[in-house]
Every structure is written in structure tokens, then in C-alpha cells.
Image 1 (cartoon, rainbow, N blue to C red):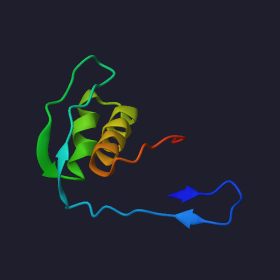
Image 2: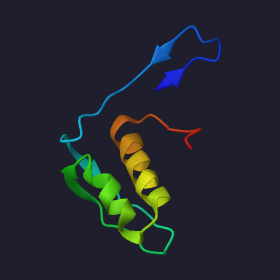
Image 3: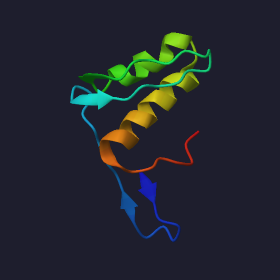
Length: 77
């Protein structure tokens, strides 16, 4: 979701969770890195969370979105 600075425009993209995508290798905070793989989009969160950190799960999901769409995601919490 993107809201323009002047609040005149909102743009949103939805990726169905069961879409088959290429999930890139993801670095985790525990020093491990996952292998890149073809899988369903919702698996990116699980792959990232193998470290036990929700932030790693979110980061892997965001990396997958960026890789899939070419759109850089910033300003996330």
C-alpha cells in the first residue's frame, strides 16, 4: 500500500498467498541463509522465521515481494 505525500492517491498491490513464485535466498539474524526456491508466496514468511525472529520472517517476505515485482519496499515497521 502506498499513500501519496499529498494524500490524493492510494495504490495497492495484492499478491495471492498461494501464487507460485521464486523466493530468493534470505539472510537471517542468526547468521544463516535460506536457499532460493520456487514455492508458494506465503512460504516466504515461514522460511524467514526459521531463526525464530518475526523480523526475519517479515524481511524475507519483503525481499520476495521486491524480487517478484521490482518495487522497493521501504518505510515498513
